[in-house]
Image 1 (tube, rainbow, N blue to C red):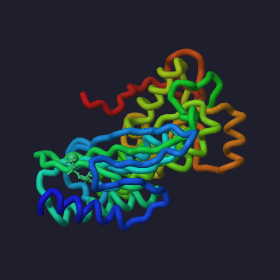
Image 2 (image 1 turned 30 degrees about the vertical axis):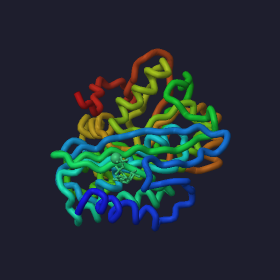
Image 3 (image 1 turned 120 degrees about the horizontal axis):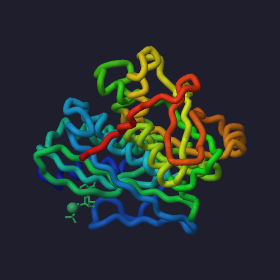
Image 4 (image 1 turned 180 degrees about the horizontal axis):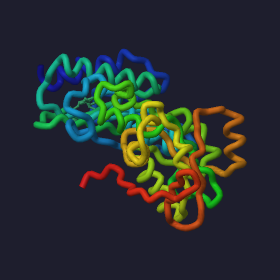
Length: 308
Ligand code: ADP
Ligand code: MG
């Protein structure tokens, strides 16, 4: 199977068959894709690379790799408050394995469909290491992007979902939490709902501790977190500390949102949407991240994911 057959069979035909609700002028098949951004909106874009053996274990099913390569990018768009529109896929493959490509593209398209996103182009190359790079494109009403830099003293610190599940699954293959590692569900709707409410937001991909740290340094503020308020799955709840905290604060791959907002806005937001959101702490003066265990500050080494 040549490169063009591969693209047609596994990506172009399926992309054409699916009929997402957002139109494009030109998708796969020309030199570049063309689409319209609605008037009064800004384009929001991001890219994330998954390298086999680094970002996912080598035995991860192709279907899960396809899903996850889209999901991690939609999580970044969600963290800006953007509405996702489309993705581009750069695929570097050690071989053109038909079964693998079938599974991979199925997982990728399932995630696309789940979030109303379409594949509008890409690039396909051979390479010794399986590497998947997805670029995601979306938009947001002008000047409404939720940045990391505007957290205010007195704001509540909130997270969606549970923390540490994917990191636990990485250490316990085949556990009940395996799906949280393989099939993250980015908070795409909630991210957009937070536009009128959140003062700052980030998606948690490298560990809550490190990612909240990015909000603190960008906003030049500190935070107090009550460790007991971090939402926790029963499997992790059963673990002794600090092992549990290690998964929750330093573990990667949660793909949940962490955001700040004033107590007033929090109340109106919860009344309007009743979302799965937990308050875990508060923004304070200073620059430190203070972690409380039963009102006592605990020393803890924040060490999120780092490549180098
Ligand atoms: P070029 O040589 O101009 O880079 P390609 O042969 O790489 O063109 O791609 C031809 C068309 O197929 C383009 O529209 C491109 O976006 C699309 N394409 C290539 N690889 C993929 C892929 N893995 N997934 C989706 N579309 C792809
Ligand atoms: Mg190309």
